[in-house]
Length: 400
Image (cartoon, rainbow, N blue to C red; front, side, top):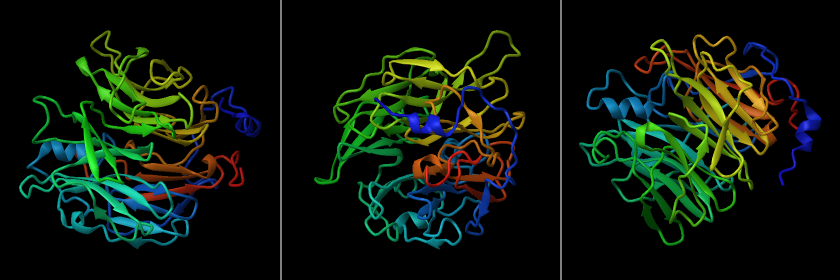
């Protein structure tokens, strides 16, 4: 059973607090970012050591690869060049890394990192340039991110990865050339064995893929009627269970799995079409049984909310609320597995998945922010990076 008593002893979250805290509060400090880039995502391994990478161009309505892939060959603006930067001093200084062949691709985007050890890591990339036949792939570093090499066959592009049972699970992206007719979403999950170099393909789809830290892997999949389902595999990807009941969602880009439990948290877009004036809203959904049943969190107001991402460490889970009309934007934290949430401030103007990174037991958060461009067609003019070392409100000190 998961022991959350330490979290409860630190802060009581029985009542959701709706305080609109500004990013200038002393709990959040702005750190430096590499100049000349408009969109960056953070991935940190500890409070000092981490990376920034370029996911392409983006705005508040979605991730860069979505707009790029769906609008080729017409791209109305210049993308950030594919880049990876490393810091060893908590974001005070940055050094650009050698990412190999993808660095020269005009329409290349980097979508996720995963480091099983501080020196050994993986990254997935996607290239929207079918003319060359190069689509990106799975990249590996064995020298703390200084150099990256593609280890997957050419012609494979991936959206997401996780590690379980010493295997690398990947969501493969075949858009725009090889996707099923009328579907944007990929249609396969690949399992890579680093010891043999063999990639096995299984007939399951998704966008986000996460592991519970043991042998169970979850992937978000869109089924009939665009209703989102979360698939589960406990046999190294050979079979997937998609049955679920309770609250359903139209979309859910972001998944978070609490280590060594059957608890999953997802950001979900809910249909609310009763009258013509009704609209979708975002909600947090929690499953305590490995994705078989889901409950929507009712403690967060459902009006004018956009929830872009879910990240955490153990019991400490963060979500990001960001929408122009939302009166309470910023990061919200839960220490009771999503039953209650507290606004801990932080930057707004970013609804993209993987735009913040949580380390050190949940007390240290690095969160990216852009200028809040009003649509996916607008180019952000800048990116800021903010850091907290006390959970955003002083309740979770670094030594927690």
